Length: 341
Length: 106
Ligand SMILES: Cc1cc2nc3c(=O)[nH]c(=O)nc-3n(C[C@H](O)[C@H](O)[C@H](O)COP(=O)(O)OP(=O)(O)OC[C@H]3O[C@@H](n4cnc5c(N)ncnc54)[C@H](O)[C@@H]3O)c2cc1C
Ligand code: FES
Image (cartoon, rainbow over all chains, first blue to last red):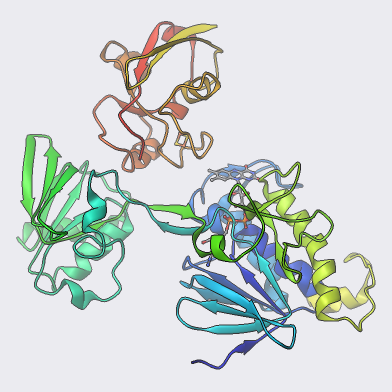
């Protein structure tokens, strides 16, 4: 068991709302750790629409999803938040001393005064491709990520997709696997041009196969894959394989949060509109994950929720400190914290 | 107003009066056409508003932009007539347009 990390607040989810919560909490001297299953900050803005413009962020007539995330990261940097990426929060419990213990799927423990759930639409998980009957093969022959490359040693591997993951794993697993076939529905790719060029070069050398087409079905008994049926430009073909790695992007699933015993409203966590506290005192929920009458899933609503939640979290974490309301424009003590004094 | 027809997978036809400038997806949602999910609300970020443009209309409707083509990678049973309905804007020339909803969305 690892030694628990001691901090003030643990924020579950590093989407725009979780990020802005660092700022609000930071003004009250609360130190934050953020945990996210993604490998970088930004939640939906970074994962689903980095290049698309948002038009309803106050005072930003137009800003792209990624630019918003970059700005937030800059804004919160004075508070030195600590990030734990590629980790899913599996659960939390209340300790005897009144603090909380948050646990990740990698077994890390964090102790804190308050838990802020900013989990948006849930954790990002690989999308299951629309191939009938694929469930039977999952975990035995079909995998959505590569945990250890060794698991593919000596295998006839089929990789499906046209993005960076598909291309990167085609290149990386080629030396390990017995054979690699990449299947994509068209000869153009979303992936970085450099990897695409490398892939085509490998095909020239006869090291991998590339087939244009869409997987329509799978063959093999007892979850052991033997071939994939592929609809290509020249008709249907079977491609022999015993492992398949489909990369069809990410989708959001509520995940373990559903089992945390919090009051819910249609898969969202019910909160009050004074503190944005859940049915467990000391556990808050802000952003897309929460529900209250009139809730709107907007970034700006999440920012407001972060500010109000902070008042309650600060009272909880610093019961002996008098809460003073101050403006960042005029308060020298706030400016010192922001590093502008 | 422009008349467009959405044909659900079971063959049910939805004839709707669509406002010019609106998207085919928006009209599908407003008229509860089954099989159009449009999870991302029309941002070309989910591929759950996939349709097949009727063969008679493919030239008039046109081909997808690169971003839409990328998104179509995530759709099910993509064909040469595939489009994301949130990326088709209704305009007068499309009066009479017919699109078909696929068996399933991704
Ligand atoms: C295409 C599109 C366009 C949009 N346009 C706008 C717009 O114009 N204006 C606007 O205001 N809003 C817009 N939105 C909505 C906006 O993106 C969301 O309201 C916002 O992202 C919510 O932020 P969040 O921080 O609450 O959650 P999210 O951005 O969903 O982030 C939550 C994070 O928590 C992580 N997470 C969840 N559970 C766990 C767990 N158990 N362990 C670890 N990590 C976990 C997830 O991986 C994710 O990174 C749009 C959304 C989409 C999809
Ligand atoms: S509605 Fe999501 S891509 Fe069209």
